Image (cartoon, rainbow, N blue to C red; front, top):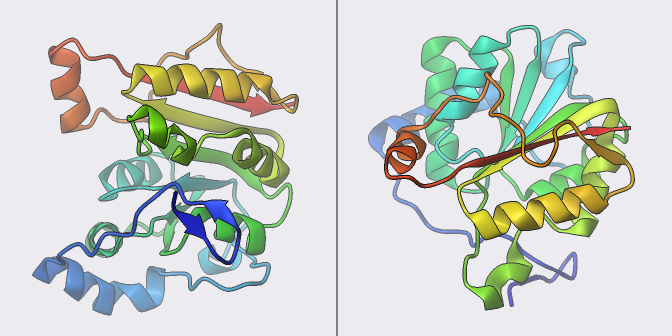
Length: 226
């Protein structure tokens, strides 16, 4: 089991030393100072970097950042903070932000649980996006999955009333677990009867589109805080 010695918990990710492309490395150097928010062990005013007070959406584990950038551009009235541990993904998203001038998006490179615990005030988030988290598909690894009751309770603590959690997965047994865990949290209410239709703001990725053509399922879940 992968324990975080500082938090005494099982981590839901493994830090991989991914190879940076030239463009990603350049983006970290050029755009990092403006669009990266440094992790700190103290509460942070997330409206300050944007220079306005708008609805705030947190995305956890944005991968290479294409979906995150798309959603932020499609919803200019909201501000977005993406949290990711892997450097190539951070560099990739910073490249998109800088080159496409996405002013309503910032990035934190750190463990999302620590960011939630130490930087984000209770009741301050209007939404949380968790798209295609690591399924840890072997049964003995299921305990490493991110969507577990204590984590969902933490998300609810950080959500404003009426705020939402939107999860998506292409692993059916993880979808079943997500539905059970989210459905068992008393602070949340499902917006659908079971799984939700894919919200229009979430784009289809190339990988997802290929899977759908092959008959693979994708499950979206959208729950709101009561």
